[in-house]
Length: 83
Image 1 (cartoon, rainbow, N blue to C red):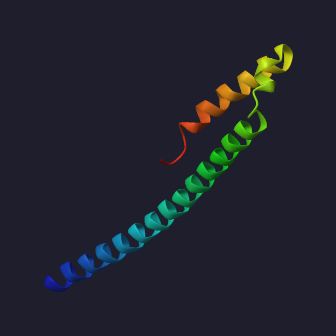
Image 2: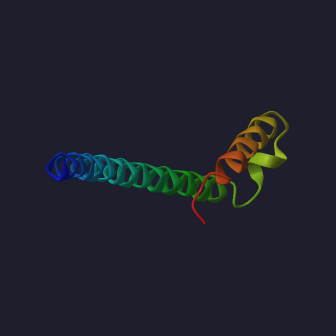
Image 3: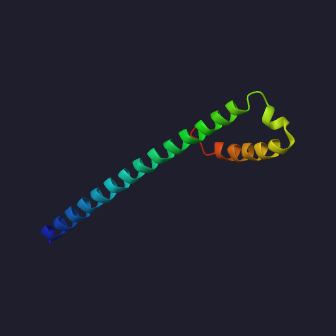
């Protein structure tokens, strides 16, 4: 009886080890993905601000509307960056 319990316990521990290891690997991949996405969003934000550092796009009526919409999208994306 003790041998059967030992075998079952060993199987459970071994299975748990592999499950936990795989979950850790997936978590690390997701963390890398989120970091890369955050860096891309920050780069877009920096580039958008650099493009309109003089305010000339916002001041133009036709381009200004489009630029303001792009800025709204960028602000929404900025909420997903790592802080």
